[in-house]
Image (cartoon, rainbow, N blue to C red; front, side):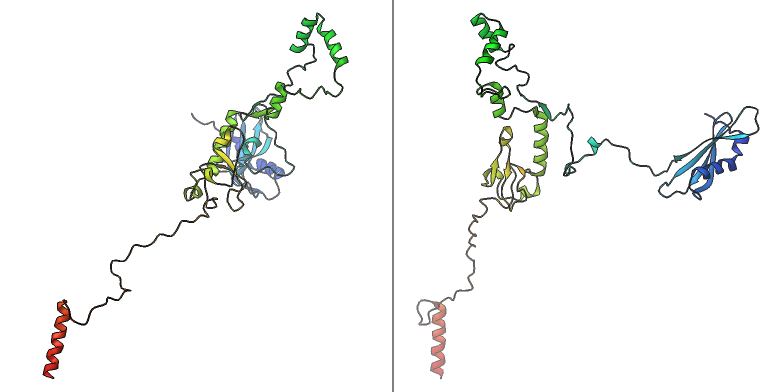
Length: 310
């Protein structure tokens, strides 16, 4: 596509554009004229080099225009724009995606989204009516047995209820009490996705594939310093309680291990070397009184001959 030819009078208004750029910018921060581009009929934008520190590659863009059949060029706008090789700030990322483990400090609050995949609703018993409510199954059963209305039963229960019983405390043996005892009496609990995500992090930090575990004499499953966890994660993880271990106070995989294993103190006995083939530390005793040894006899005969000659 052929580019539009800039208007002659607007293209020649370089001085007007420079004065507008110098007025908008800090004095002395305007560089050379980089060119002009036609934005429309009798509308031209002039570009000037920006000498402001920290704005490498940026350009001052001054747009001028001329009315139809007019000989006077007027100023439209002045703005600082990045060029093709301009130094730009990185793309903005939401805080929820910028946050990394360990960034939370004292006094910081980290809100959790309502649809967080790591959590799921827990059983709190808030939706279930209390036993003395007109909507509870217990009140309806008593009303049917006694022939009275649920409202009359409610009034009777309130008048004869125990003074020490609080309405907000779940009754002993009820579903709400059992849920609170096993740790389910919370608004939200860990979901299956949250459990798997935590297990993957712990497995990567203190798992069997780490260099420490590869060189360990044994795994944490047989270590006396391992504190078992509760719930389903105890099948694969525990907490290290050895102050000399690099994983002290951390959640470790049962297949993890280190040199501070509780049974590593029982050192194996050093292996005994095999007996040498040639023992150079022992002196062989040879008989000197003759006998059946031919060499010894030869020595004795030679000595006898020497003595006879002597």
